[in-house]
Amino acid sequence: MPEVIFPGEKGRLEGRYQPAKTRNAPIAIILHPHPQFGGTMNNPVVYNLYYQFANRGFSVLRFNFRGVGRSQGSFDHGTGELSDAAAALDWAQSVNPDARACWIAGFSFGAWIGMQLLMRRPEVEGFISIAAPANLYDFSFLAPCPSSGLFVHGDKDAVVPTSAVQTLVEKLKTQKGIVIEQQVVPGANHFFDGKTEDLMGVVGTYLDKRLPGTRKESKDSAA
Image (cartoon, rainbow, N blue to C red):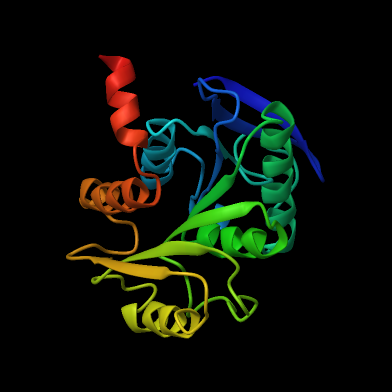
């Protein structure tokens, strides 16, 4: 899990990068929660998401938004953080020029940023949005949502009501040609305290369905 430093709009950005073993492996970018409320790339959900993709043969990058950890710059209310996410994808593509596809996974604030990046980058073919803050930020830019993906939420989330995510998902489900799935983790709060393992079970099941054979291949190669 090598540390990497790559250029962003306001200076260097700090990340952790796990390269895949094959040249044409897909890329995954993992986006952390709100920087002003303690969100970093070392958040337990972000850390575990990173390995969900790494274990399935992706080249995976998680990083700190501007002003977090050793990343330069200061919080920019989402506009600059979207630029950071784009810079992260640019960097990952530069070191993986043969990558066949890309996925975005974001947690809370990171889910909002990830969905905006999804709209701007047609090569992104799948997404995972965890505790998407549909009541706190405007998601109307998803018109239409260009890729299939998964929304995951906790039914005890006191920050974002389940109904807010449900409304967003139902709107996106009306679009033709894509499949939007939603899963609710029983007993989970906004931060998935004590429920990270359950959350990763949901994510892993979804990835195995979308990426048939990757889990089996990783087991065979380890045998």
